[in-house]
Image (cartoon, rainbow, N blue to C red):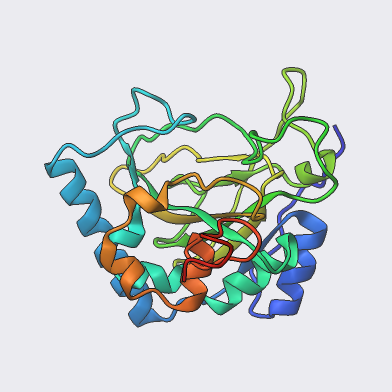
Amino acid sequence: MSTTLSLPLPTADPERAERDLREHGICAVSDALDAATLGEVRDRLYTAAADDRTHGRTHKFAFDYAHDDTNQRVWNLLSRAPVFADLVTHPIALRLLRSALGRSILLGNLSANITGPGGGEMQIHPDQLFVPEPWPSEPQGANATWCVDDFTADNGATCFVPGSHLLNRNPRPDDAITAVPMEAPAGTLIVFDSRVWHRTGFNRTENGYRAGIFGWYTKPIYRTQENWFLALDPSVVQYASDELAELLGYKTMGFGLVNGKSPR
């Protein structure tokens, strides 16, 4: 397996980030969220996580360790607070996502992963598991990850296998895999294409939590991971901008028409 050994450093230059995404399959934009927005996002996320725990609404994802109670997923963030919609339509995130996937994209999911002290590693995987091999030469999806807390090697920063997107396939049992933690301060935006192998890292801290919000986007030919038509609070659709409505499939061209025209 031939891959590079390092990850690109965070940059404030969107053009540099686009180049990193093309060359490395991953990029990081520093200070993508200002302090006020980051503070609101963090407060709303941890409030939603506590509410889910109180009401027994937590459940694991396919690649989480089933018995790792330190890791929590928070689902359907769009229905939790308006600030999360701002992340979905963030101009820099959409610029990078569209540079990888094309102009027309769908939001497949918006959820959070919070790993706590003693949290274990996730299984290494790409997000393009749903595509049969051989894969097309371009990614079919991409993630926009928002660092809600600092991502460090000790607190469970997402670990990536640099250059794995160039292999354009799933991992195999005989692959020698070295995953590198993407360390970045809170407020950083990380975008990576769906072919990049990655996993949640170990949280080796005694009392530190690491929260990340993951926006999953795909080319428009794929079904969304979250069923927005059933999951969303009606107010989200009622007040959605045209851009958000398009990303959710409520405003569309070609696919998802109603009586030959866009439903909105």
